[in-house]
Length: 253
Image (cartoon, rainbow, N blue to C red; front, side, top):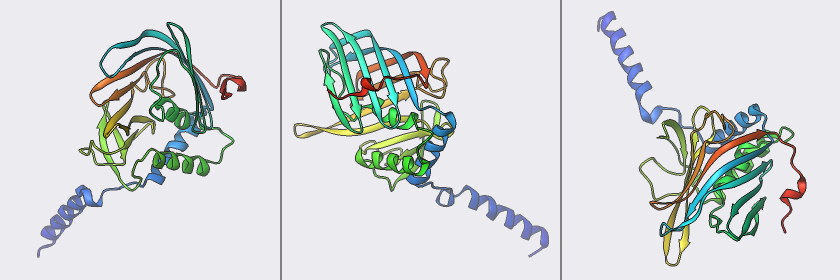
């Protein structure tokens, strides 16, 4: 074999190996969660106060609330308070470490772990927490949602390349969570709930990261879908980072 031919073959083999999906970098869920926590710590956000406008529908498409005010307080680790104004009074939902309390004239999408609760865990990483402990907490959250932590692939959603944990891109019938590859923020959360003898697909979508209001700290909109039916859409109107939050807001009553 001539020297020129040998070099050409070597270059071809190197290119082929680099392009081989089987040999491409496949991150573990632990690696992904560690990156999510690193990015969260770099953003330095331990609390968020969010004002949004929210509409909600029941599974038949009937309007439950239409363009009403919603206020949210998110605080590390894993604390959330939501208030939704509606006819008959204000719905209040408080979630602390997986425990839930609701005072609800209007019906919220409380049959899920709450897409906003997941945001509370991901977007508010307290600076005084050990990053390794926080990452393991996130891994535990993913497992508790029924997502298979052994499967990590690549996909694209809302115009962004994502790490997809729990399934392959074409496996729409499995619980999964998507993280933006660059920002390491959640893009999508798919879980399944029992409804009688059938399984209902619940799809939470975190849309419009990088908007003028939410920036890299909160999505422009959060949608909750049940199968092919939109149940809820919240549009972010204002955001305050590291706001002073009264601890009494998170009391479970």
